[in-house]
Image 1 (cartoon, rainbow, N blue to C red):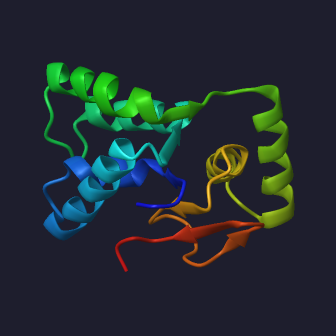
Image 2 (image 1 turned 135 degrees about the vertical axis):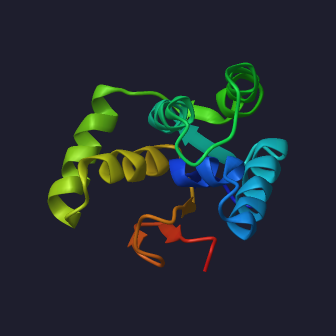
Length: 140
């Protein structure tokens, strides 16, 4: 990963998933490389959503102690965007102007706020642009 990139929650979830080994491999590379070269960014929202999925046991096979270690070692260092009034206002603007769901608007707003060029996500329209930010589905 040689450009500043934002990782949507689904990328982190696939890194632990066992149902789709090819997607897991790609997601693990994005997380590992992004954390190593400090080019991957996530938001507080991504951490919350990932923990929620992990604790419910949906699509993930991870024990609580490993979850805590992963969050501390991998996710917290990538977490550069916290909730703020400016983020909410930008997300409201994006939601209204681009017909995005509220949570997708928050993700796009966080990626824009952090100056990312790529937003890796399986859930949004591949190739869609928001200024200098482009959505890329890494599993295509």
